Image (tube, rainbow, N blue to C red; front, side, top):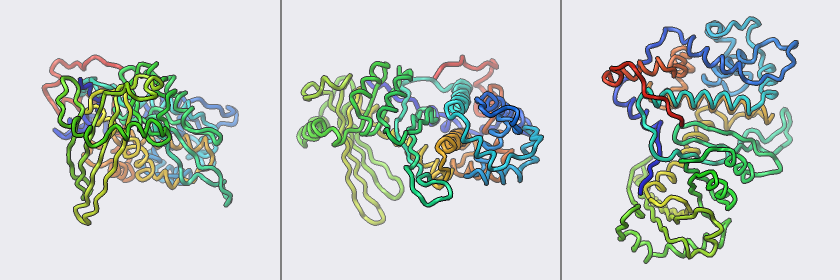
Length: 449
């Protein structure tokens, strides 16, 4: 039986494509921006109060607006704020002027990433809840989160020296359903992703959640934690588990692939194939699923293992004629091939919709901040900006990168949309798209995500 994977951002984009979403808010975005300012004021401030010149919330708001407009360093943040001082003073007094780049750097290196993350992620989740009920986006199927790590390429050096040091590596828990990075966890120099991922998963409510991960995190203990938390899993299988990999590779021989393709199961689907064109390439993706797992030598050691999946991608470049063929294997607790295909494709969102945008759209790949805590906090601001840009892009009907350029050109106009996810603004925007949706003037009850 097909469970289905939630796709909230995709549904919102589809709604936006059916008509113009117009936010009926005041000419200046003071009210929605001050909502964000209030949240920044709740971040834990560990500075010595008698020596504090700039309030933390004010400093963080200035930094966020500058980052949203493309500032990729503390020097650029200062320069942008100086240039936009008149605009910034519409939102906060800035009695002592713009903080220096050294002040921004010092505060970011002192700030608790956990405290800042709690505020930024909470702000984004609230926006999603309001958007979901305003536009009547139903909560159906499994929520999909991805586990994956990212290395900051510009961080492997000591400041103002030529000496190399380990690059900053961050483990991300990405909510593919809502387009939000829920958790960013710095990986210490003397550890790796596996224990950190297990610790994070043990603290999450995973009921009605499917967790996908790469081969590194395909571990028995990791899957055991997900199962104990009542979640589902799909993990890539490679030769770091040689015995299981060889068994699965041998199992999907040509004869068995034909039998799976020709079979007509009474319940869940076990075969899927489709062809699509992307970037001058014609790609054929084929998925085979088998629920026959009892024969595996280590079957009892992998909790809730219910299926084996073979995924093959054939690609042909229509310009050069070059052909490629990739084969991947997965293990999962899901038993419908359509769900597995959604998760396998969806797992790349952490690369394409998070890591790629952080590196290319927001310039994080070129960021040379070497202080680990400062980098974490800067990256959290990047992720907040990215998530808001994703929400705004369907409204502007352009790409995420173009939306960021809009912010650089006219920050006030963009802030009206980025921070206007309050109940009344969303209700009005919904009526602009569908005048029949709110005849009674009431929104649907708020549901947790």
